[in-house]
Amino acid sequence: MQHAHTSLQDHQALVAEQDAVIALLRDADLSAPVPHCAPWSVRDLLTHLAGVHRWAAAMSRLYPEEADLPDEDPPAAADPAADYTAAAHELRHALAGDPSRPCRTLTGPGTVAQWRRRQLHETAVHRWDLHDALGLPRSTDELLAADCIAEVLDTLHPRQVRLGRIPAPRIGVALRAPGGHWVLGAPQHVVAEVSGPAAALAQLLWRRTGVDDAHLTSTGDRGAATALLGTALTP
Image 1 (cartoon, one colour):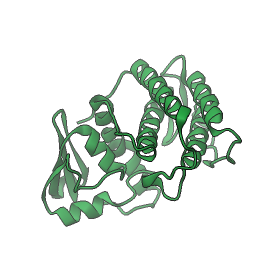
Image 2 (tube, rainbow, N blue to C red):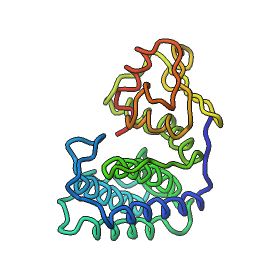
Image 3 (cartoon, rainbow, N blue to C red):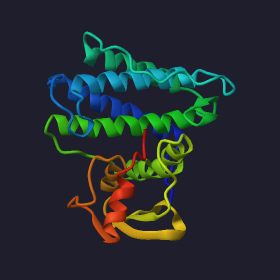
Image 4 (cartoon, rainbow, N blue to C red):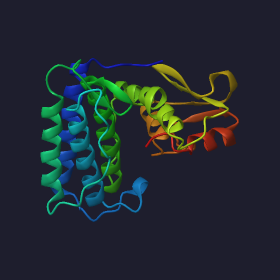
C-alpha cells in the first residue's frame, strides 16, 4: 500500500515540521548527543539538516536534464539554530508554486512535488532525533508515517540497491499497520511479518528503533527480519 499526500498538503506539512524543529531549538543544548546518529551532537544534526534543505532547494531549481549537484554537508555555522531557520525558509520558497514543475530530483528527472515529499520525511525523521536528544517523546502523524514507509519502499531502498550500497534482498518482510500493508524486499519470499502503528514501522525502517520495540509484534523468522532491517535501507 502507498498513501500519498496531495502536493499542497506536503508543502503545508513540511512547513509544520520545520516549525516544530525551530521550536525545539529555543531551549536546546546544542552539545547534546543524538542517540541514533552517533557521534553527532544536536549542532551536527542541524548542520546536516540545513545543508540538506539547501541542497534540495538547489536541486529543485535545476532543469531535469542537468547533472546532479554534489551532496555535501557545509561547515558548521556560528549560530546553527539561526542558520537552520534560514535554510528552512529557503527551501519553503524554492518548493512553493507549481508542484508539477519539472526539475532534477534524487532519482533523476521529476517534479517539485517529489522534493516536497522527500524533505517532509527528512525533516520528520530528524525531528524524532531531536526529541531523542532532548529527552522528549516522539510524535508522528500516522498518515505521514504511512507515506514515510511507502517512500522507503518505493524510492529510497531501491535507490540504495541501484547505487550498490546494499545487495538486493533475497527475502521479504511484511509490514502491517492498522491502515496499510507493505512488503520490504522480495514479495515472493516473505519470511516474517512485523506489525504495529505506522509511526513505529517508519521508525524501524529508518533504524530509529528495533524489532524488539514494545509497539511492534513480529512473527516468522525474526533473525532474518532483523538482518534485513539492519541494512542501510535509507541514505
